[in-house]
Amino acid sequence: MGNSWSGLRRELENDYICESLKGRVQYFLTHYRKAHDDYGRVAVRVDGEEVLMGNPFDYYVKGYIHKERALKREMEVSPREWTGKETLYDEENRKVEDMINEMANNDGFFEIYHITDAIREYKNSDIKQSITSSNPVIRMFAIMHRRLGKRTLINMISEIDNQPEWLQFFYKLRLEAEDLL
Image 1 (tube, rainbow, N blue to C red):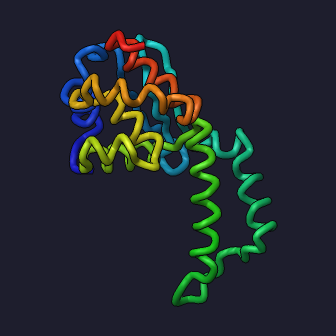
Image 2 (image 1 turned 90 degrees about the horizontal axis):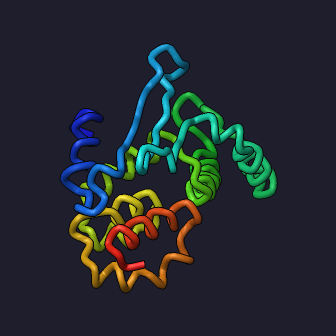
């Protein structure tokens, strides 16, 4: 990403966030050095309480792996197969995996790379693109962005109920912080 996590965190918490939420929202990321594949976890804290968290084990614990396998069976997707030159059935498998990842994200379950990839895209996108992104994590960062004005926020009130449940919290947080809700 070009920056250390501490640098990115500082940018998100100080440079990008609106004045009314400065000091209230913190981002947390850690990798467990001795864990398999350097696994870790990520969290967003509001007023010291973790309101959004992610780790790679949620995919298994919450049953998304079973949903993925069932969908692959239902869609008759063959397992990936390495021929020595290419991987067969990769596109079909990736399509199902992306569908399940989107479902998990909408339910509020993330892996670290979902958050870090969203940060990268958010930082490189216009605020208007970010607030209408298909990625709910990018919309989370955008709703708390300092350049999102009150007029835009007022127009977004009707959109709250269309957001995933976990994201509604962040919409309401920003609107309440601006005394708009």
